[in-house]
Image (tube, rainbow, N blue to C red; front, side, top):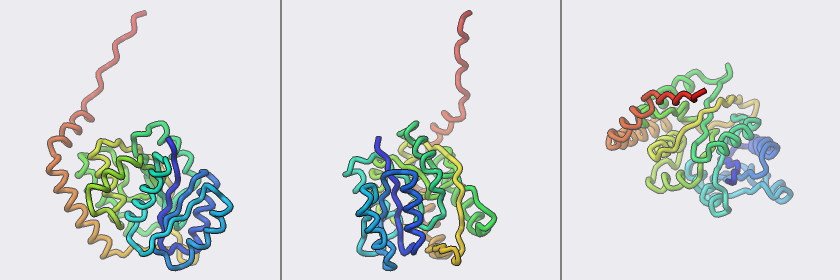
Length: 259
């Protein structure tokens, strides 16, 4: 097994360098994919990359979306021999100090996806927190309640090979729809979810926080995504029901050991 940290970024400003330094302090291999950024944040990392062989900076010529940036990084990582990737946001929202914990969980169960279960602070927008409950409910339905704790948190470890296969099946999951669709399609491939808590910060503009979330545009994208996935789940309904029954069936008691 070989793990790396993969950070997609689009115009993340000075926070990107802080995020990369925090990640490098906890993990030796950190790759950044600049998704058509025009703010110079990627170029600012090149000097650090020249001094640190574990840091690699990849540039996409135009903004293609988070999923497309992750896909580009995954393909390059697989070619370089990496088997797992921990994705995290570039803007400082995600807890770099939890990287070793998530990597250890992935190494203990290499066939699983290790998903961040967000722990929000008081500053988290109530509308965003409530809205993700809707997406989580739909993902539960689409996977037969396969144990996915949160569908939207981008702090997670993926096994690279099955994720590349899943992304190769569809032209979607290239933008904001990447995170929830990835866990659904991996669950359909019987990739088990391991959920671990991850504190999530919402930084103010004064703190350098950057958000490209657009409420109506991105919720429309999620609505279309859940429509597609619900139809896909309907086609897989017998399999999902069998899996659900198997999960709910009590384990057979172990035979008593004779004295």
